[in-house]
Length: 336
Image (tube, rainbow, N blue to C red; front, top):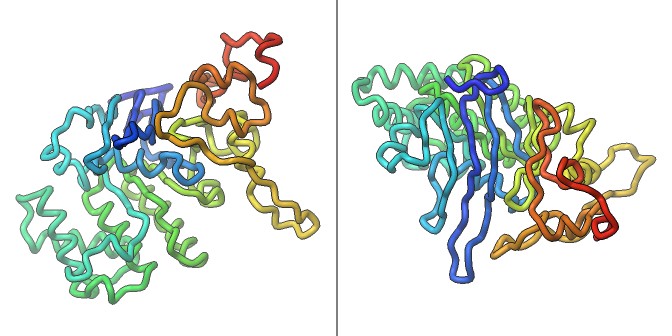
């Protein structure tokens, strides 16, 4: 058992990096991420497209393309995942760590019956389980997500998008994994079905006592679901804090700008705030803060050196020179 700050850390990530090797050089998609996921916690990961959220989630299961190079440490219930060979990871996927993929329309095999999806996964991880027992486990998992046992003989194309996502959730929890990674689990669903799926995920997580990493663009979803929120930008985890701190007392200039860019539903305020500029290319990116070119508080130091992870308090970390003890403002630093 790994205890951090009095809490049981199901997953611990240390100086984790994922670089995609290309002919033009390495694309630093995830670059030096440190964080823990606690028992029964939902950790939300937010940020712009291309910031590294989905790459990080897939990397934890080691299901990245061959061009990816990973380094650092990932401990899942004390086991070092980065030291595991592919055959060892196959035993862990689904059993200890599972993923709910972004698009249920394409994540299920259209020519396999529902029961075959379940029996294949269950018996792969638990070969001692008979087919009859596997079907019983599948029926219970489907019942937990509100699907009748009678649908086991149906094919995925016979289900709606929302029902397929329920199936994906059932597949992810049938073996009671310690950690579930949900990558944009409601993206392709309408608002009503989205709310139902989010409520279902909450209930299931509480029932099986699992932890969850929820990857999403939707700040409303993490406000509803997450206990803590990690904000990613250009491969860096720039801020990590409890949900209320992120929403009401954010520190990193990017987090502040991201929250301010959420459209205001008040018809008296029609101005739309946005973050000027574009994220940097992650190909052969240099030193310095990756938000520097878009930051309203940029200093010379920000362009020259990568900011450290600054511990603000027990649960609040921000990657910014504005809060580093070692930073001493002078005339050279006062302006970017």
